[in-house]
Length: 86
Image (cartoon, rainbow, N blue to C red):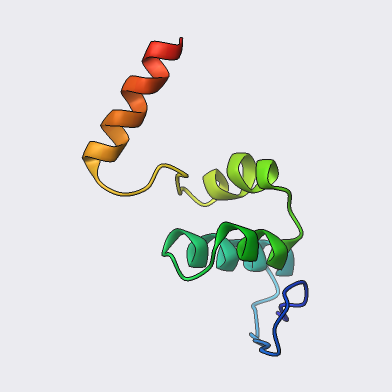
């Protein structure tokens, strides 16, 4: 898997089993690095060629992650805000 859509001189090559799709692996890698604070959202999106909306609504949830990060308190605040809006 080579990361090619990001302004960098670093490349990563991984030998994947035949049943793992390269695009899926790239998306997982970008999502995890973003979620763990290693990459900015823009860097992660650039790695996989996705728009902000696609990244937030498709990629992050695809891997069981949430744009709402942090503590249980953060999640409770977001949940309350959503309930007020509905």
